[in-house]
Amino acid sequence: MSDDSSCQGSAQGSGAGGLRADARRNRARILAAAGEVFAEHGASASTEEIARRAGVAIGTVFRHFPTKDDLLRAIMKDLLEQLTSQASLLAAEGDPAAALPEFFASVVGQAAAKKTVVDLLAAAGTDVGVAAAIQGLQQRIGTLLSRAQQAGTVRQDVQATDLMALITSTCHGALHGGWDDRLQRRVLTIIFDGLRPAGAGQ
Image 1: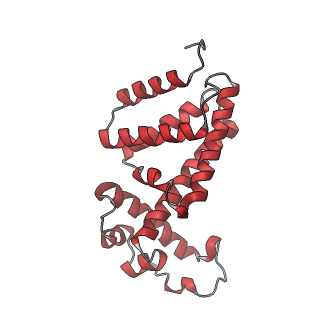
Image 2: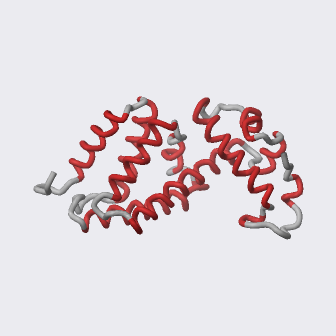
Image 3: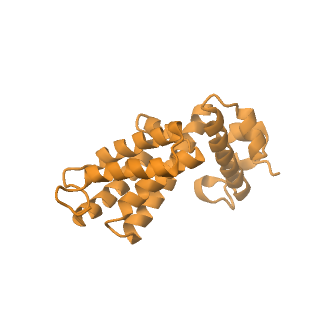
């Protein structure tokens, strides 16, 4: 196990964010472990348990994330960046008519099956520390929406903020209700039936 106590020092040989390779690996392990622990135990989960699962010393966790709020904020950003990358890929390469439903279904499926910390997605909208990340995700969702509207599969009056609200609330329902695949499909069908323009083919 490598300690990153010198990560505050020389940036020689460092990568993104000025962290050395071993410090970046530690940070990634901490975030992955924290995501699991918070998903299982909520925001009251202990930092000691996070350090144990990450395989690092508790001091290493605090060097990267001095407070629990810093750690929660980092998880929010990480989750938002993952979702943004997924939406960007679908916007660039996906079928315009199918990309938005595919993204929506994927996020809901993660919430229901993997117990992703989707509670943070709702909190992110009110946390100035992740404002840029939430804005970036909303922009990508806006792109998916525009392409779907151009393809005639979503009504023209629907806005990206509407979709963000639908995604967040549906994820919460899937997470806390433990929705199975059948219920997920039924709910998503109802949502996209409501988003479809009047008279559009079913």
